[in-house]
Image 1: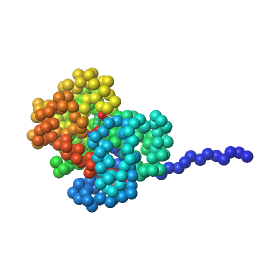
Image 2 (image 1 turned 90 degrees about the vertical axis):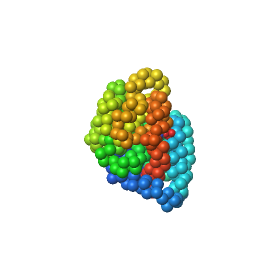
Image 3 (image 1 turned 90 degrees about the horizontal axis):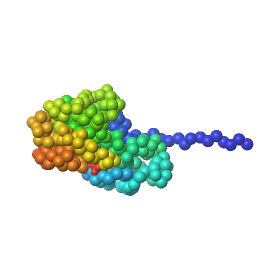
Length: 308
Ligand code: CP
Ligand code: NVA
């Protein structure tokens, strides 16, 4: 008798946030509105995700992302389990995904390689959220656009200058803020430009400009944003990067070239006297802790949207 044909297992197709474009612009706007509502009346949502559980997987260190996801799910009535360590070493990533989706309602993962997020999303029957990969940091961008909207009362026509490394945070800001009408002006050294494919994609959806001149990007900006010069996983390049990025430090002189009411933004953690001076990050127009606070509210809105 012929062996029966093996049929691949069918999987459901949950909504993910593996990269910024997984949320349509319409859903993205709804998440921001819901986040503002949750921020105003958090207790109304105290049981919204009762009985739901999240898997939090972290291959790299985290303060904000890990704690705000854990707080978000708990303040919505659910709970989280944590795993810290390499994903896909002890068993294939696709097996990890198919264990976690039997136990929990969503997977939040911070990974070295973006392909790990893609593999989790490919195999999981529950939503997968990118808590930072080498290519994107979409949850950060969500909080950042909410922070900009609160500060300027709008996103359309706001100019955000991103100065420094064309990294994961820059990519997500171009894709998320750019899509919502923010002019994202990126200034990087030539060798550290953002991925041209992502720039092209973002430029098809919003106003993106690229330059190697930080003063040009900052001119007329409502917000000046920077991030570390060596991201997690690039520690061996720290010295070479410090040399290349020195002219891109956000100091008083550069910040003064933005609008007089411009704000300073940083995803944190920050390295003072490297990408930003103490005077700038500590000044009254620095809104870095508003960004950090909004991680909590936007991630609650995101979880409600993905898990409900
Ligand atoms: N901004 C941010 O993602 O911070 P953590 O690395 O502490 O999570
Ligand atoms: N670009 C930084 C962001 C940290 C939140 C990194 O990837 O390390």
